[in-house]
Image 1 (cartoon, rainbow, N blue to C red):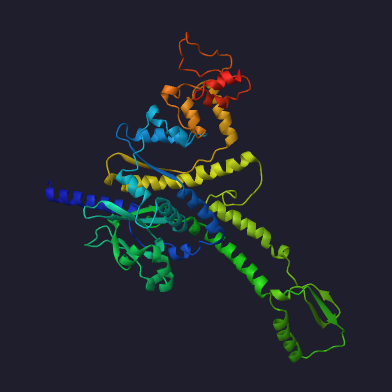
Image 2: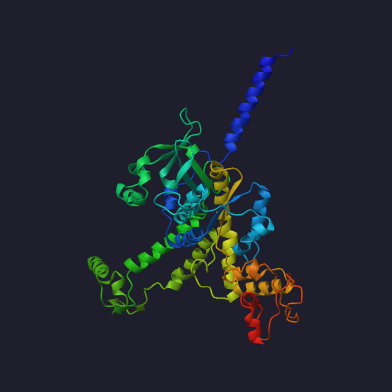
Amino acid sequence: MWNPFKQLAARFKSNRFAVALRTALGTGQPGRWHSDHREESEQFTGWTFVAIRAICLQAMQASVAVYDDTVNNSNQKLFRRHLRMDAGYGLTRSLYAGEAGASIPLSNDHALCQILKHPNPTQSGAAFRYERVLQLQLTGTSIVWNVPNQFGKTVHRYVIPTAIASPVAPSTDMPEGGYRIQTPSSRYDLDYFSSYSSSHHLLQQVLGKVIPLSQLQITRWPHPLYQDDGQSPVSAGARWIDSANQIDAARWAQMNNGADPSIVVTCGKDMRPTREELEAAAAMFDQKYGGTENTGKAIFTTGEQVVSLTATPREMDYNASFVEFRDAILALHGVPGIAAGISDGGSYAAFYASLKQFISLTVQPILDLLAEDDTEHLAPQFGRNLTIEIEATQIDDPDLLEKRLATDIRAQIIKVDELRAIRGLPPLGPENGGDQIVSADRKQPVHSESQTEDHTTAPSLPPGKSLMDALHLRADPTLMNGAN
């Protein structure tokens, strides 16, 4: 017999299971930390500092733009990304994206642009991005507090250090849960935290309180097992970092505490010191020869040998191990030696190739992750179909750029004003020929008054002029006559 109540109960049970499954698999939910984020934060030293700081500096000087994709929705974003990846032009091509069909960036007066460039009263957008990337690389999790006004719209944004945030389970008051900002007595010494929070006075107002998840924007490097925590490069390479720290500590202890005489001069075999005399000699040895200030002194004992006691750097293998762990930690964060300030030598082209690899494979993916999160969680508060894009400063080989420009000129696919923009020159405008195609055809005759002007080519170049001089011919036609 058909029982509607039984069928309704089964459907309710099925829906409840689906909700529970989505909650379990969803990321960004508060839960127990699976790594010690305080300890991870304290590893911001040595080569970890060098690597993360190199990434943060690139994020700090990145450019931020907001686009309205109402016209063509997501296709606009794909088109802009294609323009950005066009090697050799970078942002310059995006200046003319409007002519090609891509959406134009919103003005800086837009409310969303304002909060991205000035997220809170004490920080600029550059410093804010630096902090986000710092927390993401150190702890695998970046927590941004989007402070709402009485209407629920974000008016300020703050980066909360992951180490002082403690997950709070969902409750009746907060169905989604939240994060408690720990007081200094629970995790930090008061002196330490007061010095840190001097530039973050708002954190002092929320210490010990719980911020609901609805006001927080959480970005994570996904953990392979736990959805409620992130996997940081520092945690993944903890053994490498610990080994490097131990080598540094051992090297420091060897230099600071080790007895380092150069030779031992022994006396005759007839001497028979007692145990008390040997102990007294040992105490005198520790007092007289211990420490780096006694390096090179000679020691006289019984016997007839001359023995070297110094452990050379080669025997301790400090040099090789130092370089090996340095390279391992830099690789952990995707930072080449050149980007970290280490000059590895090599050719001019290899230098630019290494920096370009750093931007393309390390910095830009991180910025894309942050931009996507802002687009999904922040942009909808300020309008529909708004897309936030964060672009790293492009690294391009000048020689390669010259070759590409020469090719484009020969193919007649670049305009005068586009070429001038690449050179950092002001545009001429359509009335002065700025919208005409640059041509490198030297055989083309100069236009006369009786000839019909051809807007697909630029005037031919006089003898002795380079291809780049095509930029100036439109601005000053007397260059053509003067050269002749």
